[in-house]
Length: 171
Image 1 (cartoon, helix red, strand yellow):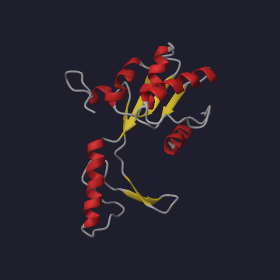
Image 2 (tube, rainbow, N blue to C red):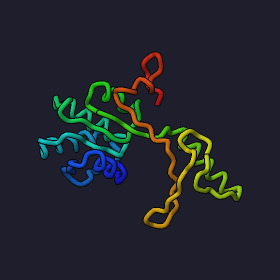
Image 3 (cartoon, rainbow, N blue to C red):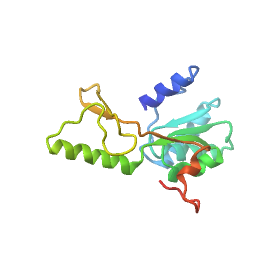
Image 4 (cartoon, rainbow, N blue to C red):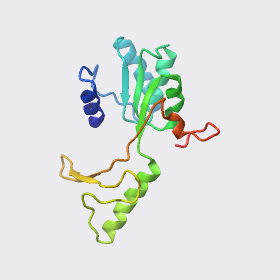
């Protein structure tokens, strides 16, 4: 969430947060209900940003119910299969994610390499697109965190890239 806020502020300097983070417990119904509360409390609200898989569809459902498509939009972490229909309708403007299978592979690869006694180092390629030339930074607790470039952004312009020929979502 911190990264999303920082990037949004960098791109949109006039961005103002209406409220602190709202917990929705990874539950689409709670995200929906909390969004209805936010829309009532902050009638000038323009976007809902979420970092949980369920925030975008829950918020987009509330936006749709209130007839606010085109006036308010949701964006954040989700998958096409969960939020794609809301991107098509305009209730969500974008989603972003890592391909779960690739992230899982890389996680297992790191564990395997460490178990073999090898070191994970800056610039390594970990076997999947977007995990080449990794960087490693320590978090606030001093724990090393591996960063890749595998982030995927999806909006109306490229949603079809994440669909099969029969119109189903790939992820």
